[in-house]
Length: 142
Image 1: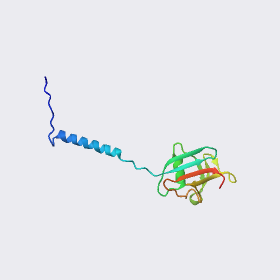
Image 2: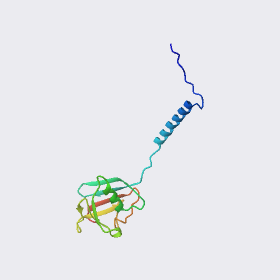
Image 3: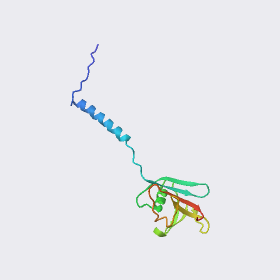
Image 4: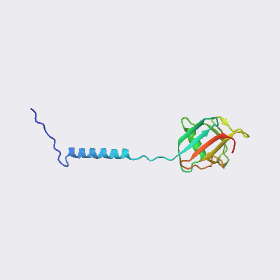
């Protein structure tokens, strides 16, 4: 019958130190995994075509000094993005169409609201804050 040999770890032996290092590494890894992830600030863009169809972008990353124009460009860059047409720039920028649905002039047009408040200037200069909801609705000006 073979005699079982027991391994004895002497303090500061290479094997003992390696085991201690592995134990600490495992604890550190589990602490990092349990650490909450920092949520990035986002804005929401809703396109309401007024025919029962809406398109929603709920996780557009917000950036300092962002405008509705920047939000539209971010939505356009999304793999299932939207297409829009505008003319002018800055304070004179005007949205003409979204996804082929064009303003009618005297009839229905694209009108935006930020957090329910009707826009009062060009979408290209209207600032957006984190967690804002931008709604573009095709309808009569009210």
